[in-house]
Image (cartoon, rainbow, N blue to C red; front, side):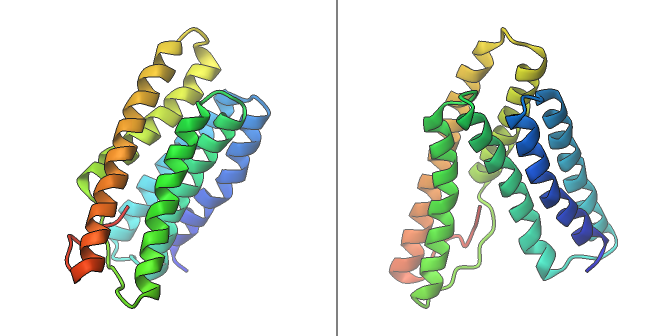
Length: 184
């Protein structure tokens, strides 16, 4: 264990706190927890790169922490009907689809070493901005319904594009062992 991994574990421990705050209707505090986790993500990444503290554990924990927080916020907001259920299902299903495809490739003896596609990076940024923005809207701007409509459309389009491109690359790899070898 090193400092970046400890910070990442701290980010994972913030997930139930964020869920609890959302369910309790404390959207302003949930927003602050969300921002704190984002700052922690930047700090742990900087320390790991700057001081050559990257580890295999960290390579798994960091994206896990990101996805746990993001999907938890989407599911919590969807459960409370502050985010459309279809969008929550779309966002969560994309991640399940990609993880399932990677696991299947391992099971079938065609493991896939993966790196993020550019569309996935843009998708993740949009999902983060929308989750944080929706928390802020719920906390401080009750009349910004346009944000939900526009944000949902942008996130949906990027999520579908990202899933389709990953599945195309996965199918190519499974068919003949080629592809860009990229991941979520």
